[in-house]
Image (cartoon, rainbow, N blue to C red; front, top):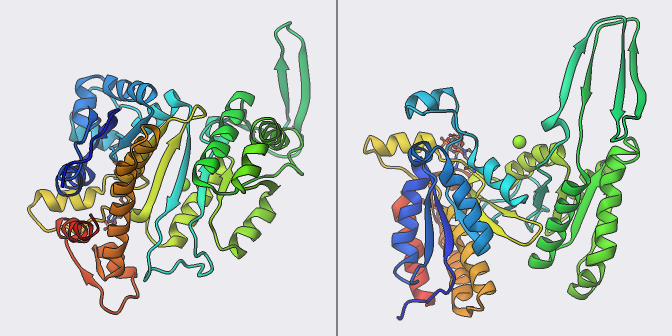
Length: 403
Ligand code: NAP
Ligand code: MG
């Protein structure tokens, strides 16, 4: 078979530990034999980030802006222990944080469903995508402990120097706590656009929820901005695509989500998204089956797995022991990116290849061949646990039959 040609390069962001090992296996076993893979390579492995004073991360984000589509391997976010382990010059920031800040993007997380792994909520027969607004609120708060007798006020000074004051609480009878949070209209609008664009892209409804009945200015602003952006720029497109947007109170959203069959995008404020994405991921079974894509308001896409570098497996691998690490989410990051590249460059063959590779992966698991994490969860009677490489080779056998 002739290799599939590409036009524009994908931005390839390599990473760390076990996922770096998997990255290479995926390319060697499932991609380069079939595609004339064109990538602009950035090594976001911690050693090279350290060597370049983290410039490589910024460069990779700028390249993503230029080309429009990136695929990223999981990377280490350094902590004190990593600074020692890798002899780092500095405790470099999370690459995902840096990239997200440059692209001003929203992260969408979607589980991959397979037969034999039943969600804890069995009615969830379709994936629920969580979109988390990753700016502001409690994550950028200022807070204080205050002593009895303290009167606390919110003071805003405008550009002309005029002050507006509002009493938060007069702590006349007890010590206590206060907190200040903010968000920006601009950021909320970007979030709304990213959600609506992604919905059109994936043909899914958007649900957005907040607590506007209690928070009549803060949360209500989110509700209003979503509605304005939707009515101005998306309503017609949604009608044409046969999808819908609706807003509901967070309490009602939670109840509806539990009763639903899935299949929609649930847009959440920062804190709700943090909590709900963990709940949804757990309910669907495995973090290793959760994909993640960062979408900017201009429609730039960066695909990755939601999980980390699977450090424990990597140390086993280094000792020469066999690993059974799940490569599915990383593989779907590649297929997502290739499909998007194919769509933008009008390369139906590349899109078809991505579809077939995903199907071959799911067929493999549904035929009973899976890595250890899924083996523990699967109810298939004929299930068989294989190692990291054997799994990818089994996918390749299925893929060959389809091509
Ligand atoms: P992790 O790498 O997601 O792994 C946590 C545990 O989940 C693993 O030890 C493993 O459980 C299981 N697991 C996760 N992915 C798996 C897979 N593909 N196949 C099989 N099992 C899987 O999280 P972590 O150990 O907390 O973090 C490790 C490093 O990843 C950290 O340095 C962190 O900074 C980084 N991280 C990066 C990203 C990112 O780049 N997007 C996200 C999160 C974390 P068992 O050990 O029980 O098998
Ligand atoms: Mg969380």
